[in-house]
Amino acid sequence: MKKLLLLGGLRYLIPVIEAAKQLGHYVITCDYIPENIAHNYSDEYHNVSITDKEQVLSLAKKLNIDGIMSFAVDPGVVTAAYVAEKMNLPSPGPLKSIEILQNKALFREFLKSHNFNVPFSKSYSDRIHALKDFEGNNDYPVIVKPVDAAGSKGVNKVKSFEELNLAILNALKFSPSKTFIIEEFLESKVFSSDSDSFSINGELVAVTFSAQRFDTKSPNPFTPSAYSWPSNISENNQAYLKTELQRLITLLDLKSSVYNIEVRETLEQKAYIMEVSPRGGGNRLSEMIRYATGTDFIRCAVQSALGEDFDDIKLNNFKGFWAEIILYSNSTGIFEKFVIDDKIRKAVVETDLWVKQGEIVNAFNAANDAIGTVVLQFDNKETMEKVLKHYSRYFKVVVNIK
Image 1 (tube, rainbow, N blue to C red):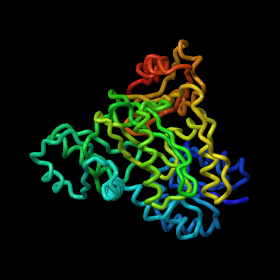
Image 2 (cartoon, rainbow, N blue to C red):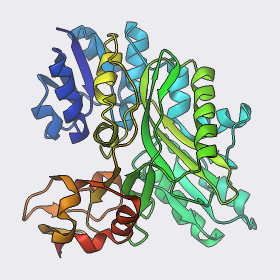
Image 3 (cartoon, rainbow, N blue to C red):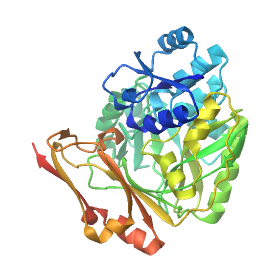
């Protein structure tokens, strides 16, 4: 029985814990929030901050672990790579490479220096310096975001200089390093993609692209509200992106890992790699790939973290058209009920509701404000698009406003 240390305790870790136990392993979780739900499923829990590399390393040595992972938990990815390097444990790649992927400013610089398609961007730790740089600048809109935060926290689209200061202050609020990036806004031709993929020994063996949706009426319109598969990015650009992602993995000397990858196709039909993180994505993205293709990235990620032989990873064709609706409220209040329209029930594969009647729910400002998910399967794309275009008609989260 091997020991696997998982950083974090979010519900997205539950299927990882289940996969590890099915493989016969002992699972330990840690973070500084004992009430996180995943701790109820692990064999052992320790109250240690996942961003404190030295404390996690000390715990890992004390427990004599065989592997470490930060699946779907962005703040722990660098810590996991650090511990793996210090203890000579399996890792997605060199610590330096992981640090590049996990920092938006470093990642943009890396892409630029190796001739990838990359939007214009500049990072700052000085708010006044940034304001002086952009005073009189007419190249709007731009995106302002923390260099080291995930889940759409602190992200704002800025349409004029008058909006810039407030956006910077918001980004700084969510940046542990108090560093932010100002980036050219790329207008998408089709839905952008946020989906999971997998490499084995440096070879990108399974690549998926999705159609990522957003709710323009939500408090944060950059927080994903729905996904569907397959993607509507052009076949030519999907092929180009696969080649470029493989080139990135080779340049960074990455090995075996699940990745959460965000890409975009612009109005000029140009394809961009926006983010690559060596972890499973939040919002149950690897679970959705398992639903849609039968390929189990989660089980393989556990095997990778423990240095075991992999199951055969063969990405099968999508079995129909799949979608995931993120459940949320656009206002803070008391949850009353969740209602599914009878017209859509036959398409519902799974409903996963995370709150009970009478509990407080937050307005949808970031991914961690979600209150559940619905998995859907359709026979044809037309029906799926019709439902996703107006999904609030079919799925209603009823909240009593405080």
